[in-house]
Length: 467
Image 1 (cartoon, rainbow, N blue to C red):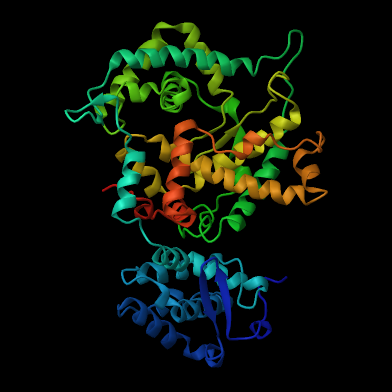
Image 2 (image 1 turned 180 degrees about the vertical axis):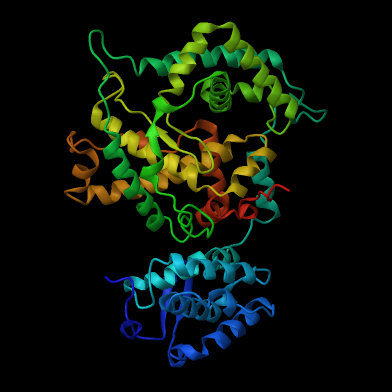
């Protein structure tokens, strides 16, 4: 398929293009009668219509190549024909500016197969984001109250009426948590110790990079119209998963990184009811700066006074998949764990799940991530929703692979292709954080969760953006 399809080859018009719950109208019949000599007046008039600004847009794009101008003419026409679907406060000036910049970076021309041009324009302009969020309904007062109790669970103290409340921080309980974390580190390290007299076997990063690129496309399609519709997100900023994938052995593991690793695990273990819910017992509140600093100080002291624990945490950092935040790298283990953990096929299925999980971290909207600072159980945002959406994707992937005789061969490559993913891989993890994310989705619906996570519409899950 040529990038520069002849526009006379477009499908029948008018027609519709779907984006999940959205439908856009496509009909360039009148535009085709506009000669290139009329482009200056057309671009300036359209710009003023959309933005209310009397600016000579033509002077900015007169130097564009003919195909660039053709692309932009159709893009603005398509956008204008569907702008009534947008909320009243939508920033049309920013949308037009994005389309002007996209003209020279385009990936499809008018007439491209599968409505590729329309899908590019309406996503890149922000139309899909704005229109889909407008159609969704935020939680009512009663649901919002239930959500607040999930985000901010009560503590272990009681008020005068016998109801639980979050009282002062109990530092002695945090010391119990530090002891428990030391045991967790030992548990996890045992998964990586090869049998006596053997060495760890390498995992192919090159193969995992190919899987990563496949997953980037799979997620875009499987979670539309949400995952790939933030106009400033990874699907528009040049992000390519394989180019950001590296070995966990490259991760720095100094004192700051060891402390951060312990803080992350303290959240996962500390809220876990099966391990005593020690953060609940301690009245820990992540919104209280003093609580966070007290926990950090305690863990910092534990690491500095226990060199064996410090060395083991360093080793775990080198063996823990991670996303370094923002536009940073995503790291996966370059070796298989001990056979005592499971088979190599088990591990490959697990790594594929991990690749999805770390990609979700990369796709999370900054406004969504920032809301963690305003709730007591911050790991619901930091990991719970991430793993919830990971399972959505992983379930779709396994469903597709199970119907394809070649699918598992491509993913497992050289391993036992008859080995199915462990059922636990299809369940939301991260303990109470994951269970809470599931409960929130049950209350607000999956579309609201995806719009909040990928598009930053946090009000749809009862969390206003941080000011």
